[in-house]
Length: 181
Image (cartoon, rainbow, N blue to C red; front, side):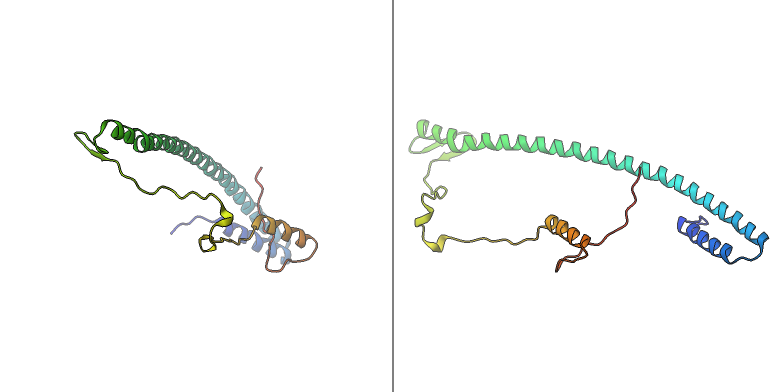
């Protein structure tokens, strides 16, 4: 079990000491309590300095990790682009070059190498829509998606709150933040 006093404990001590000082009638005792209060406030100052150092280190580590993430993402993007180029080359081979060789050099739509046998065949390709207006309705589907635009809703809810109103179904609460400078 640790004997370290937490910041929460120190703040609690300050509240207790301030309350005791407020109700203390003996001047000597009050002076002693004020001395303790100064000591506790100095301890909090020291803790805050340590927290500042710790916060700085966390920020530094976070930035280093973000840099590393960005580097990996850039490398992943580069590899993905390389993969797309390879896919395009393979598609050219499979759909243009090899069929041309089989058609021109092969016999009866067939061509053999040491590794593979190539055979030309006919199949149906992708569907091409030439006129949407005359297509039978059984092939037409409608897709609707409803979603809430949170950015716009938040903006309107803040404006309404400033006017003392509230939008139905929406709540935006004020929260406390600490600005570091």
